[in-house]
Amino acid sequence: MTSTSSVEFNGQVVVISGAATGIGKASAQLIAARGATVIALDFNAAALNELSKELSLAANQSHVCDISSQDQIDKAISAILKDHGKIDALVNTAGIVGPSNTVVEDVNWSDFEKVLQVNLYGAIWLTQAVIPSMKDKKYGRIVHLASIAGKEGNPGLSPYNTSKAGMIGFVKGVAKEIAPHGVVINALAPAVISTPMNSNTSEETLKYMISRIPMGRVGQPEEVAEIVAFMASKACSFTTGFTFDASGGRATY
Ligand SMILES: NC(=O)c1ccc[n+]([C@@H]2O[C@H](COP(=O)([O-])OP(=O)(O)OC[C@H]3O[C@@H](n4cnc5c(N)ncnc54)[C@H](O)[C@@H]3O)[C@@H](O)[C@H]2O)c1
Figure 1 (cartoon, rainbow, N blue to C red):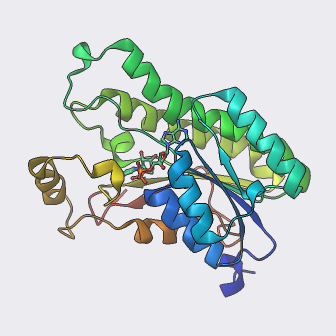
Figure 2: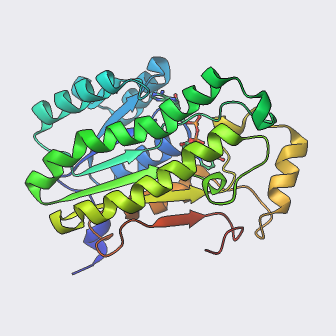
């Protein structure tokens, strides 16, 4: 039955991609504080090293891994399973914005494809890599960071919109495949959150984004991490294929 202990992670192995900064980092901090053995993946080795020091992660608890490479994902997940024996939860937060303020006909195809490779193919490959061991254990939680952009679409952001909408569709269908095996998969769609991803966003764009948020402010990564932690925990036991919201009231669906 659901109880306070259901949101704790004692004895659990939780893999977090994009853990070095932003939402991934806040999630790693919170989930580690709730008792998990956190395994951090990121391609930013320097920032990953900082996180490892902060959370006192052992060498086999952090992997430099570029999720736009299926080979690197497979190697990292195999190493984690060999070292730790299981993966209770995967939290995939690694992502890039790609071309912005660019109408679709002006987007260079290699730039478009790069966003799909990181945000969508990376999510698919990570999911494919963790499902077999989760099925064996008859337990698993998979969390993908989508975006309000995948639900509503933002002008000038077609690669990002496409990648996040693809992720939401992917989660819906896979959820039905793995539901009988005790494995749950959900997405989370934040509006604008104060992280390094938005550090170069212009004042004007931020103002526009905030104007669409009834709470009248940007979200904080710690607020998103609270939802991620729930989604990655045993407590998230009867919801799958869903896209959770973290938008300060912008999306009420
Ligand atoms: N910040 C927002 O406003 C916002 C809103 C909606 C959705 N999101 C989504 O939330 C997730 C986290 O974003 P954030 O705001 O924390 O951004 P961020 O830039 O702070 O963090 C993203 C992390 O992913 C890592 N990363 C990027 N590409 C990678 C790759 N190919 N392989 C491995 N690691 C890679 C980066 O090094 C970084 O540590 C992203 O998927 C993003 O699309 C963010």
